[in-house]
Length: 567
Image (tube, rainbow, N blue to C red; front, side, top):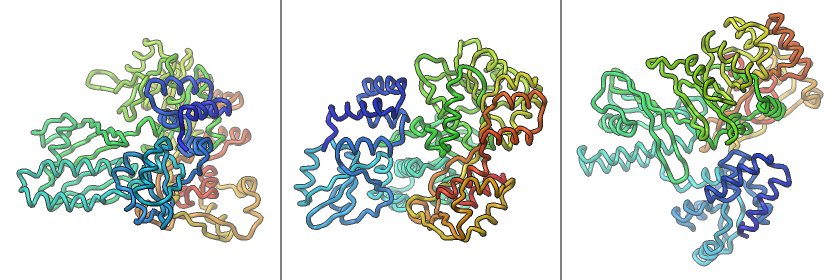
């Protein structure tokens, strides 16, 4: 049954009356739908107001069709053969299972009855239609795709026929295929590494570099030139480093790449960083617990103060801050950022790139921002006392300031500001929330399996975590502690996760809300241990405990949490 305009309106009414979205978000959604001519479901996903599974379930319920997840289902080749790839991809239809009488399909566009009738006539089967989420369908539709290795073999054959002089187009198309593949796999980086006799393509998937392709050596110069042309870099420069950006558009995804080229012994190494898009800026997608989500949202509603996120490079600090900015971004506030580099573009905000050659440092940029009538300020990183002092004073004078720092845990952040020369009473008066986080790999949902383990062995495993407390663990999960055996989870390894057992990453975090008691400790220049002790009285969950919770929920493994918390 199609989602007609009236049903589209019904979905909007359900979101508002059911309080799935706030009044402010409802107004933003209405404006976006009117401006973009997208349906309500697409708009909700694009604006990151809800997860695509959540909105998909509501839309399916209104249309009176089943909601399914197609990603973890085996798609039969016989079913794929019944619907041509072009029709399936253009209309977001995934054929799942076929019998002599029927064909089961999944789609997120039910408003195409003529097409459904055509498919029934063409396949001579009755369609059984289910509803699936947009991103889930996108992954499932890859069943139609030719593998990168096959595309490489085709490119080599074409070059052998055309000759090397006419091979540029084939190699350029292969480069485009590599970028598209990386985007669909949610890779963070593509490494193009020349060796003595070949060119190795590697991708960083879930934080781990993996070999993807091995190209002939004669592809090297064409790929290098192609990247430089796309990034508007000098094609005749081979002896010095160059940096640039590339934007690429595909039918179902837009990709922004940050380009870095450096000369090495065997040629020029190229690293393409795939920058996050607005569609990924969602706190729920980061894996934050409900308690942490509530605390972050509450702090972000304040008109002034500081929200600090700490962690090592690559721990998702910027994505976390931009996910909060995404919620706050509206036409009635002025948001300005100073960053080095700008990794995420957020429309409606004023983003400044640090440029030390032009004397535009974090500190100088922050001074300039304060003369631009800002409501909300993001400082990419507080690196020095001068930047810290300006940021704290901005928070003190009525601005909401977001910033990142490099400390091991949340409690160490507050003394770190004191070490930078910030007066203790200023730190106590301005900091609202401190978040420390790490990224761990998620267990692949397509091959997850339950493993029975003795509770004593599980406790011994968790005991290797620093500061693990058995009493607190017993309070968290009393049912597990009382039983002799329990279940934990792991990924067996499958094609979806490159046989690693993991697919995607999530944050494990600890969060300190600065209340009057902790302000008193900051003014007394208390040590981090004293701050943690006071925060735990108010129910603070440590990063390790958050990780243990996620292990028991089947989201990650104990080994992943142990590795992350020991960094």
